[in-house]
Length: 289
Image 1: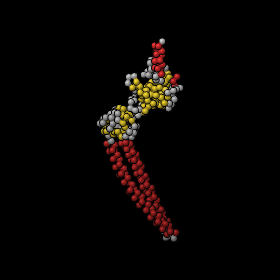
Image 2: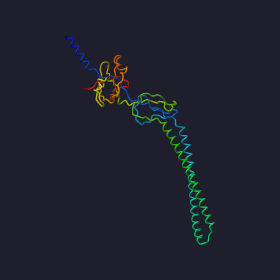
Image 3: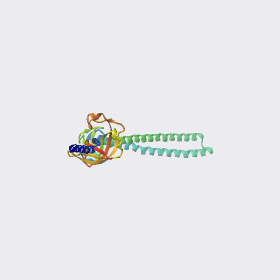
Image 4: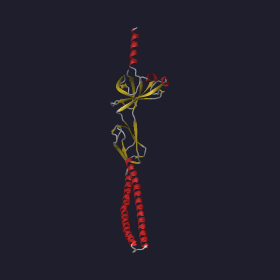
């Protein structure tokens, strides 16, 4: 009788300590890829390094782009120098028109007094029209120069973007997980350079049954357990950050073959990492009553 009672107490104790769900830790990993083609002349990072957001960590050879930019700047300078001559020419033509307009007024007065002929008036009007056409033609030349400058500016912006793309800028704060390439290697647009993740906060993806789902709510606090030695656990606070909308069959890595036919819901628990949690590490949760 005593032996049976002890067995029952042990059984109750084990059930009381049983976790409600099991899973593995994961983190949002970002693969940083090259945005240009060329030789990787610099890559200042190693696996395990802590990087800041916006930190410049590497550079692809920019020589060809800088030479192209220098060429375009020279072309722009040469085209822009034409503007001074065009403006000067327009000013001369405007002065000619102004002088002819004064002469026209004088002829008009003389014509009114009978001291000039209609032919003289026609001649001066003709000359004014010629100068006006010259002014319009010169302004058209000026507009074409502005369009040419605009085209060169667009090309310069494109080259500058190519130069900027050669700089590898770290997009998020985190830890370098994997380094895929090294200095002096040739890289190409879209080729992975390194992998990074913010390990300061991890997510434990667990699976709960339909019968447990009513106990789990967003932003709910739960106890997260990770292995501490062979038989002991380390308990950490966690918060429910996501609950799946649809059920799925239990993943093979979580339960036994018999239980894999059950439908479960995926749940993510966010846990502040003190350095003891690693990606892929198993974990358990106990839902607080």
